Length: 485
Ligand code: GLU
Image 1 (cartoon, helix red, strand yellow):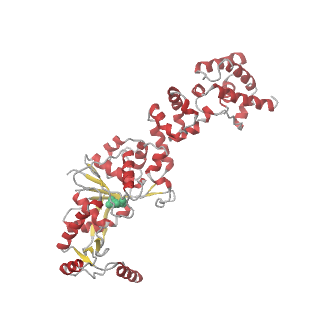
Image 2 (spheres, rainbow, N blue to C red):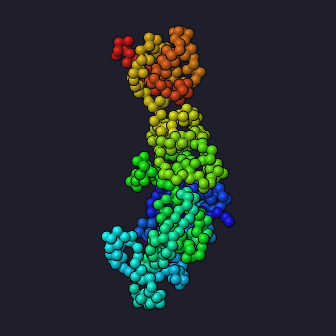
Image 3 (tube, rainbow, N blue to C red):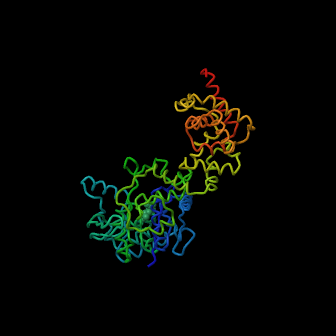
């Protein structure tokens, strides 16, 4: 049988990283099995569901590389929005009533609340007391035709249930955990457990991978499958993603939605790489992998039972690894939007940008960090740190400064030095001033960059406007003058 796996988000907010991880597992498993990935929109909560959230969730799924085979606008087992399937839920509810598996219930909200409170006061589980269980359907339909509102309640089976969960192993629910439960509310809207089963059955879903919080729902769902005479799919309840405090990620955190990372310049392949190992382990235990590789190795027997901690440092590190797999051209086009539009970077030529990226890509893990590196190139500020002062205090540095300054004066101020021209200055310092080793190399770096350390000097200098270098040298000269050197 062809494997059919669905992801069933509620469009009540942006795609959460937990949702993205679930979607990813569903997608990878479906693709690994050469099956279908189905997107079902669970939008029966009319007050909270919004089309714009559905759209943004689909856009975020696409961003990480997940495209559905069936879902809104695509496929022949639809409609794929629950709000467009109300007649289907109604039809099956009537069938369940006709078969004696469900009944109309006229108990009002207030009555039910009262009974629930009374049960809780006696420390009993709030199980429906069966008031309407034995009402004949004919009598119920008459009351409805006279305008009374009724919900439809499922007759829970008085027995225990067990199933094998691909993440948690064997799970059993003892008899009596749930009483008769509502499947259609008196306003005609279905409840989650019911429409989920109807849809999974009609959409011929073979595997359900979903968040751990749905594990208790599986009991009601198993009962419904039994009543519908349909075999249940294979279930896997995925462990939670928790924060550093080991608590469920707070909804208040801004960094738990996929669009946050998209905006922050993360690379989709890195998000996939990070999210997939947050509760699943790669058989070869290495850290960096791409989508195609994942499809080729993904199986559902490698999920972890314990919660996974969202480790933003690791995510960033993985992003850095993926960033360095991109070509310089790709990085140039990605960093663009993260650099303020009035930054002088934008004035430089493409060749300059490619060369700058070649130099700086090892210094960054996410695109926006590129701006942290720009002072090395664009700033004429000299930070007189203890390390820099130590180099300026070498006996040879003032002479090196004079030589460098006079050499640089031979060039026009708005040009760049070539590597060869820099080498010539270094050779002159060696030959004429007899400076060598750290006195020469640390000295020349300090004078040209205004810093004790930084990326490869020869490349850096070819990217730095000469007037910036001259301005740094001038500041160092002023420092010498003011300290009497
Ligand atoms: N709409 C449910 C959710 O977003 C899906 C539950 C399920 O996968 O069965 O949590």
